[in-house]
Length: 533
Picture 1: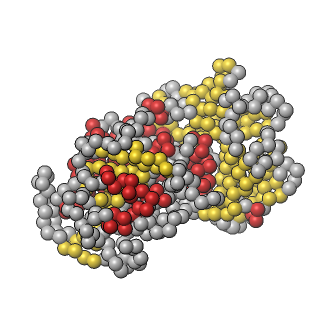
Picture 2: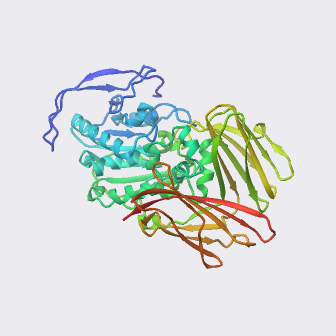
């Protein structure tokens, strides 16, 4: 059955005593999904409700609780997806004889995304109610950040005793570099205007998730449930916000447009599959994955032997991941009715994509080549950031070039509205010239890093300039400096300045140099770190 409309039917439940917990449960009203569900739905945080009882209901199959991702609500599992029509996950679970359960977390209120701690605490409370209602454990299927909210509930807030197995779909267990970008020095203006600098986005930074993993993974309760992970590596439709995210994340490895493959795994979990057909949006569809995850939903027995090999990457390995970049990033405010001009330097011909993101759609954008040719709005593909995009609501203009002309390109922008901002991301289809070696977790008094030239780095003429900007949680510039030491001709070392307190810091490095032909080039590297004592 495809869910065409939504209705609310009231079901009065009686007292149920939890088998292992002496908790009295008050009579409550539980909503049931069914035919004719009204078009209007209450998005009250903490509300949970049932799907229809299947005609072929098998009471031996545990109920399935679905947990949606950042900025999502319960209809993420049975309403429209961003790019792939209706999500049929509910239909597939219903036809397979499973009782389904849906829940609204704080994000459902439409006031931004909440942290995993807030959502996790609420989810833990509701898991106890759900457990007592059924009188048995449930299994959970979580999409994206919903997997992190789930782990917070089960491990930090003790709800593991109400749950058997957990399946996470494209969950950024180790964060997303797109969250780092949104909190970077250059993107701060745009993210603030779009309302995307909230607790949920902040929590998905690489550094913040390193902190989260150190808390969760060292808790013995993390091993009391069995975790299964899955992800995709498609970037979605061409010129979509998802494809732009995929292009940006490609510097960090294969990804689904929002989350890198390495981030979607847990060292103590079982990775079911990585599928090149699925992006971050359609991996939650029943027609895409239900048949592949259903065998792990048939029981809540966490002792069930895994049918596939466990994930092999450890947190220590991930902390040492090197950061590369073949991108140049610029951003700032856009005053009303004034031309703002920025420039990017291209040192050799290569395929390139330049994405210009603005808070409003009413912005005139021009790209001027070194020879004076003008590319305007009509020459770009225009889309809007949607769904779980870290720049949700932004207008994205994408200019694609088979061969970027060598020299200085000018980017001109003029906003018609009084409050606007921009972010320009230039991506060159070429090997990255520099590699940043800096652990995700650093010491407060010794946050050192190394910047190494890769074998494909251009032969330099003159000195290399590297400007480092460090931003704290409040978005305040903690330090800005340009000091490096040469270890040898290929390695530069430095240390982040003025990091005196533990916490998460966002680091933006702007690299400028000149190749042997005297052509200037620039690159930007962004990374967040967790500073501990």
